[in-house]
Image (cartoon, rainbow, N blue to C red):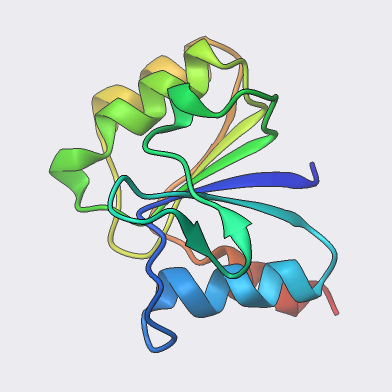
Length: 120
């Protein structure tokens, strides 16, 4: 899984969505920013939603409040992503169940950068 759509990615370097994405990009992953308020982040074209990304993505990584997580989860299912990763503090029981039933790997309330860096 090499192509990661980052929902809620911020252009502000101090925000977790930015520095986690920057770390993953440095590790060789393709980062696809998803934020309707920006045209480009980290030198990559920004898309308004996962549904708008015109190519396949492997992982949909969500940096949104729990009450806003269902839409990107449903878009990940529709896009046939392989996984949904809900970052620290993000969870959505109904959406997670739907994603699992659709065959996606689901991780919630955990940090992708922290887990990746532990692999060494």
